[in-house]
Image 1 (cartoon, rainbow, N blue to C red):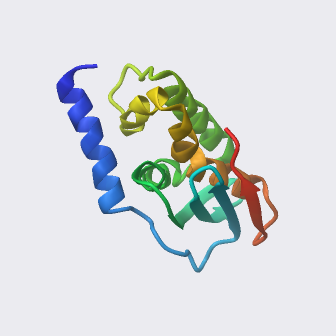
Image 2: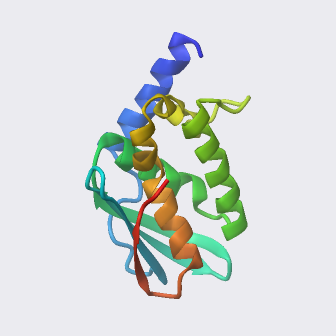
Length: 151
């Protein structure tokens, strides 16, 4: 990866950490899930509004390191309007990026997290919000699930 692309990706992470998108509790949520990373204390709650199988709106809230918060913010921008199957596919792509460092051919904001693979303990930080979202999609309406994040 070129130095310019690395710098661009670092800026994406910093921007999402400093100005998180879709942060806060979503009052119209009909699915909620909570995730935590006991190894570092990161926490993330995800609030989804589903219409059938499609996410029509979502938000997150929580605390933690820049990687976990930026990843949750970016995740919300990527999954809005997607079905559960589409979210799973995006997560699979994201997980591949953060565990291998391999980036897709096209420039993607998700690739900003490729450098995480060199710090295995940080993979849990990067995937925390994603796991909470997947759990919310699988959960019962309005039932908050507490999941210990394992990656």
